[in-house]
Image (cartoon, rainbow, N blue to C red; front, side):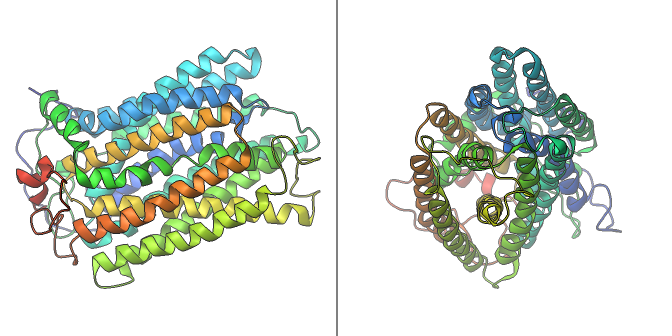
Length: 479
C-alpha cells in the first residue's frame, strides 16, 4: 500500500469545461507556479553558488559542501521520481525546498565561525531535498504541456526559474557595491539573509501545486490518470532505468550538464572578477539563460513540422554554439592560470576594455547552459507524456547530473589546472551530441500527433533491453 499524499482520491476527476487557458488547474499556470518555486529556492542557490566559493574568499568550504550536496543529490535524484509518485507533489516539493534555507543559513554561520562542518552537513541535506524538488519539477514541466508545446513550456519555466538567479545576483551586487577595492572580502550577512527570505517564500509556494490528476489541458484531457504508487513498484521501476537503453544514451549529457559549474563559477567568475562585479556578472549569466531557453525552445517546437527534425536541428544548433563558446573559453584561459593569476581582479567600472571579453564569455556560458539543459529536457519530454514515467526519467537525469557535479567540485578542490578543467568540460559536452542525435532518431516519433515514444515500432540496436515502460503498456498511455 502506498503512502497517500496530498489527500487525493482514487478515481480521476471528470473532464471540465475549458473556460480559460490561465485557470488555476491549467498546465501553463501549474508550470508557472513550479517556476516561481524554483525562482525562490534553486534560483537563489544558483546566485549564491555563482558568486564563486559561496560568497567566501576561500573556496574550500563551498567545494566540500557542494561535493556532499551532489553526492546525496545523485542518490536522491534517482530515488526522487519514485518518492514523488508515492507522496505526490506538495509533500515532495515542500520537503525539498525547506532544505535550501538550511544551506544558505550554514554560510551565514560560516561567515562568523569559519567551521566547515555545518556547511558540509547542510550541503548533504540539501542534496536530499534537491533530489526531491527536481524530480517533481521535471515531471511537472515535461508531462503537463501538450505534446507540441513542450519546448515553449520548458522555456517559460527556465525563464522564470533563472529570473531568480538574476534577482539573486542583484542582492550581493547592491549590498556589496561599495566594497570594490576589497579583493579579499566575503559577502556580508545581509546577502545570506536575503537569500533565506526568498527560499522561505518558495517553500510556502509549493503548497499551491496541484496533483497531476487535477490538471486539465485546454483540450479537456487530464495530465495523468495514475493512482498513488507504492514502494515496491517504484523500487523495481527505478532499478530498471539502469537497463533502459534510452537512459543509457542520456548518461553523457546528464553527467556533463552540471559538470562545468565548478569551473565557470569558481575559476572564471570567482578568479577573474572582484566581489561586486561577480554579483553583476551573475545577473547577466542567469539573464542569458532566459534568452537561451526561449531561443532553443522555439527551435525545438516551431522550426519544422517534423518533431524528429526539430530535435535534430536543436541539437545541431547547441553543438555548433557550444563549440564556438568553449573555443572562446580556451582563448580566455590562456591569459591566466592557478600558478599565474591575474595581477588585479577585474571591476566593471575600473577595468575598462579588459573587462569586456571575460564578461561576454561568462554571459555566453550562461546562454549555453540553458540551451544545453533545455535541449536535454525536450528530448526527455519527447520520450513519454505520462507524469509517472517522466518523474522517473527526470529523476535519473538529475541523479546522474549530480554525480557528475560531485566529481567536478572535488576536482576543483584538488587544484587541477584550469586548462584541464576546461578541456574536460568541452569534451564531455561534445560527446553528448551524437548520442542525443541517436536517441532522437531511434526513440522520438516523427510527428506531434503521437503521444509517446516509438517503443514497439523502432528497430532497437542489438543488445538494448526493452524497459518496463515499453513492454507493459505504461509508455503507450494516452493523456
